[in-house]
Image (cartoon, rainbow, N blue to C red; front, side, top):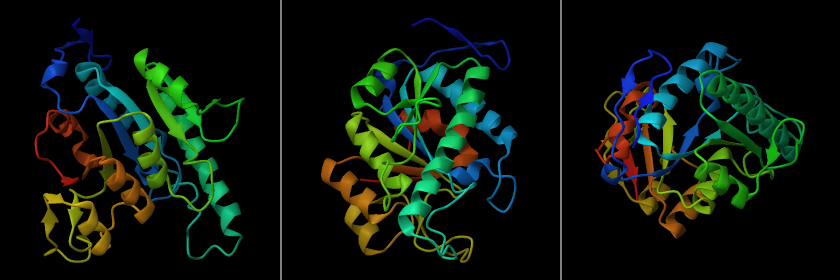
Length: 254
């Protein structure tokens, strides 16, 4: 495997032998709040660039097939309790918010030298190509990062459900869900500092205990198709390579 230059420092990044990776086809789920200004709202363009730079470094080194599903909660969350509009309308607005995040993230990736394709779950042809499973697989085969937006394209489903669906369709080995905490806890760790961090948890236990990771639909899809989920802290994105090798970081749901 050829060495690749680090676009950030100009140095050489030694490649990781792919036969040493446990996960080679990966779907990364990014919450929209990662790109917010403050109070988890608004758009922070520096955040897109920072996250894109870290992902590119790992992607070039490991040569994984990488798909990214992105949320839109920093711009508009269709499931806010205070919203008193038709739920389907609110959900479509939330899907459009994910497209805005996807456009900004794609721009950051390509400005830093990583080839990408952004695909939308419903047609916005002047912005991105519509999601077609075989076309997405072909983009991955050609070494492009695929950014998947607009959730499932249907109201009443979250971007978590979209992530689970796309991971299964694209034959991914794992879903990596970036979180603001170190993994899945027995309780909200920001409210209870004695909350227990789970190292491993099964799908059924996560459902029965109402653990706040993904919605029930996403869990049910992953459980049926035996799709593992790893929840990790986005602030430790540099440890993503260790996760790909199978090291125990965060919480594994399987």
